[in-house]
Image (cartoon, rainbow, N blue to C red; front, side, top):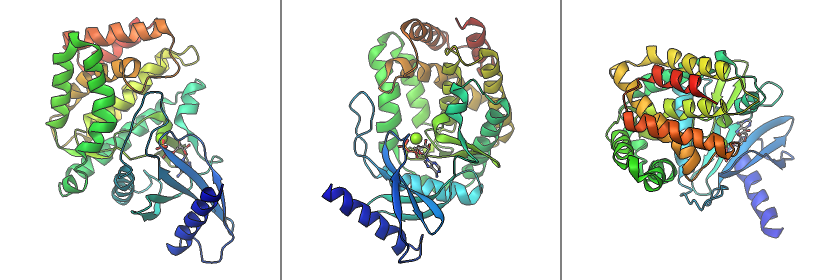
Length: 335
Ligand SMILES: Nc1ncnc2c1ncn2[C@@H]1O[C@H](COP(=O)(O)OP(=O)(O)O)[C@@H](O)[C@H]1O
Ligand SMILES: [Mg+2]
């Protein structure tokens, strides 16, 4: 309890030192839930609320999974860069302490914002939301691709490797040696493609839908690399939710198409077909990773997992479907 109180006092001190609140403000801290990789608090004072986030050294997932707390610096930098290039796409950064790794953010309150994941799980898919996500992702990738100086700031291969490539793709490669060559090619493609600022965790649990559209949270895996990763990562979440009885497959498939349709016109940094082909190669590897990787989906039963495995292995082995065909095949064959 003592160290908790000391920690709390230090956070309050951080907030007033950075003038997030005037000094002398009576501040209260309440833990917010929903994070797996950080402690998150809501700080309230003088009728004003902000979020404070601090990364954990060990992530709260079933399998052992360590990650350097330096990822907090990537997140602060991503939110600052993207927030200034595309205002409104991320919560505003109010202060950052690079020693303690405390990040103070604009609070997007539940009265006007809902977590997209909650809507999706309740069957409220929002094809318009998916299109808006595609549009925003495309805007972020298009605008950052012109800022090649960001490559040095986001040279985060170590973090991206530890948080994405190893637990998702290398894990799949280990568990499914029959597609080792295909998954290996996907990994090589990722590391060989350096085109834009990638968020790395575009999941519905990191998207708050507000009055001005979807807002992206949680940029700890920010990486200068292959933008196809963000598109595939988000599509992966949409496709997997088709296996839930509560969510209508046809609407989710339309949402997936909506996302891709809104994203595609932004692809100016490369041949659009080449980018979408990389998405189509990544997607089955990521599907497989969510059943046999280190971060398995919590909501699928064994027959559903078996369906994902056989679909993904087929797609990886044949490797011929374009992105549109892949989504269509998934939608038609879903049990
Ligand atoms: N700026 C914010 N405004 C409102 N809620 C937030 C904000 N940032 C985070 N949250 C809530 O806290 C949860 C966890 O935050 P997130 O940044 O995703 O942490 P983690 O890295 O632990 O997943 C989010 O899913 C969201 O519900
Ligand atoms: Mg999160």
